Picture 1 (tube, rainbow, N blue to C red):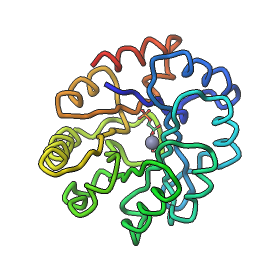
Picture 2 (cartoon, rainbow, N blue to C red):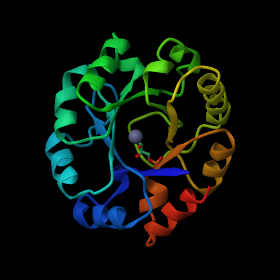
Picture 3 (cartoon, rainbow, N blue to C red):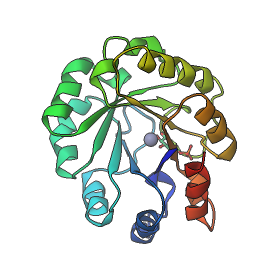
Length: 214
Ligand code: DX5
Ligand code: ZN
């Protein structure tokens, strides 16, 4: 299993120490949650923080844009050196065009679905993206309980990917822990995002390892 710890639950008064822990850990990516207070009912951090984090993080950055009109920020995300830019299907009036822009900027493109958005929305875009991010909580906050319906959705997405020429990997975000992670692995997930499960303990690297071993 691949693991993408979410910085949202880190200690914002000492991000450097949490990023150094991630650098030393078995994590595959660092997940960065950008929120604008419009698409989601919360504001997290913007490009000055992303740039500072990117300078010291040795893992590929997996940027999750919880903002309206994410196409406006493609070049700013690219300038951080991010590997993957995830945009919400619900936030994109012209999703195909936004995916093209992300590719033209040299990044991998991910499309994210909120809990109420069906996998069938991806039918005409699945072969054009490198990642699908399924939200297993309503976006905006860390530490929420996992929405159980996501297991079925993940299996359905696995089937869609395997039955087309898609190379997309499946990432799940929200409420991931040892129990939900195990069931997500069985449902075909490739990457687990984890915020509070990783940072809400004295031994975060061990939590990353537990998810890695799934
Ligand atoms: C929520 C964010 C998540 C969040 C997950 O909107 O997209 O990445 O950090 O937090 P946990 O793992 O605590 O549910
Ligand atoms: Zn996220």
